[in-house]
Image (cartoon, rainbow over all chains, first blue to last red; front, side, top):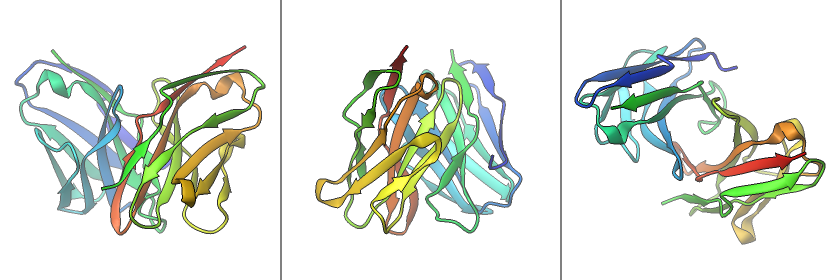
Length: 114
Length: 113
């Protein structure tokens, strides 16, 4: 257990509304990641962070923004949700002191955009 | 660009039978390779990883994987499958100074009793 929580765990929202998902970690990990999981696509990286206020884009970043104002929290925002953003969103961290690539995942947030 | 191919979308095996899940990767340098497992409604759990050294790596739950550079493969194996192994399995690759992983599309394992 890497001490990762995600909130909310489930959300239904309407097209065009803003949505913010939160990832919280308790173990001071430097790297944090947001993925989306869709059938037939596996997991795709949306954005990641390598420190407070340091973020970068992944392969499917369009329509998403992120913020990290403190080490423990990494926020994913959908500025204006669309039906194509209906997905399961996972947060991950890279364990401190280990390989950057040894990632551990949170429980996920199921988002439905109607 | 790095990529991962898991050629089998679904696999069904009988409980007690052996299992091999295939993973092929494309990467320009020495890769870091991973297998994750996801039970329904859950997050991903790290099964095992390869960084360097012995090409046969052992993981949790009795799983092992073998890195074969000549075949660009990292297949996951288990000698005797249990019904609780039914889940989706993901192979992933990373490396080269990029702090990112690329995942395959997953293989759904069904275990028949």
